[in-house]
Image (cartoon, rainbow, N blue to C red; front, side, top):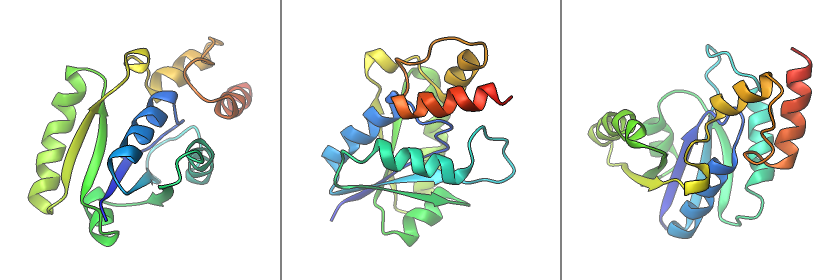
Length: 159
């Protein structure tokens, strides 16, 4: 069985993330969306909230499951018999950032990295940008699922 992991913080999950996860689900028998729960980082949503939103977002994909993790992605991969990580690339800067990590991961384990280009309609979307635009009252409804937009709007109103 081929198994891949899509790791990330997903704070919050965007339509771009969902596109990459969906395409990965067609390439691998099983995809694990690994939500980083690093407590030292300041996140808008808790790890549990991010996992819950991703479970809902990934419900259409029968071969996708969502789990939280701490530590190295390579450790997660070894513990879960994962052969590959899948990363979305929006631009050349993403490649420049991701390539050294992919090479380090390959040096630490036998896990390979698969790069998928983002869809043109989401190539400029990032969780950070979505949060920034939402914080100033901008309309981000085209970039996140409805249920994420609802939570994002509520959270921003609480700040």
